[in-house]
Image (cartoon, rainbow, N blue to C red; front, top):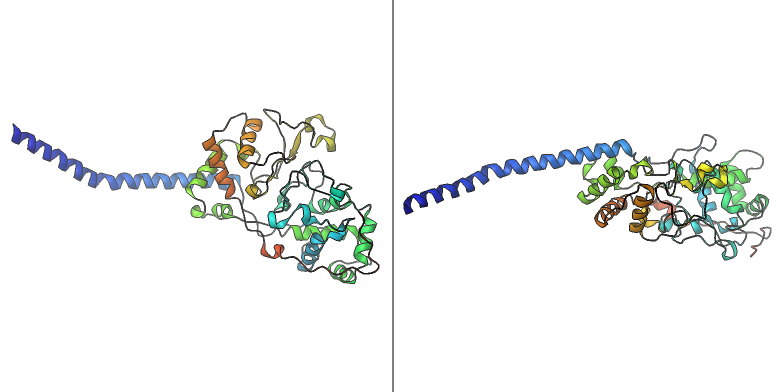
Length: 359
């Protein structure tokens, strides 16, 4: 009996050892194939929903991009003389070194005044359906004109003073004459055209674009898991396309009203009841670098922002783990700021005819 038991035990052990030897590689191979199949499925879904950023943003037919125009626009973007005080430039509120944002709730403007909305990033803004949180300007040219004349921001009293300052500087007169045709090339439209041309170069491709272009290894397994959650939780209803947002308007508080009900959003532009609390959906490109969040800049933590979105827009309470995974994916949207854009230009000096700053 003991001998028979020993033989049985030995046979069973051999079966387990050799069975594992022959079966395990097959199982591992099947598992690997399933994982690869799932990866490819997620990638194809993403490619149908999002689009990789183009190398350059498309120019307006009325404002074609040239290298000379971009160089002039860069100088104007960084020049504080476009403000009444002579200390505020476009880059003050849209600091390219901090991903086109100033990382404060609402920007400090003329005489330390603050506006009512958070300054959105200028990076990739040419991919958006319109400009400003309420979409009141259709393009970058229109957007560039607004802050200069806004009394809370750069506070120039009129465009004539802007042109007087620029025209008083010989180097600017020469550059405008090279870039623009006409008897009076230094005009307010051309100031906006040059700034817009520069802003269209501010494209920040990331590893996510490599992924969309076919490189499945561009994202980590954790980022892919977050991407899958981002898609299955319906975040893509509003955040899609090349900008991962910026392509539509939506009410903030579809399911649950947002805590700040003071800003009526596009209603102030359209006077339509349906546009109350409706804003342009922000792009999520570089989102982990462009805090604080939302139109009022009231939320500083990206995790809290994701939770609020789930609750207010989708009517669901995301778990801590789900939020962590989504944030990991969102960080993959952080791109490279064009190196040349970060190099401060040498600005031409003022002259005796240049109007003096006013506080």
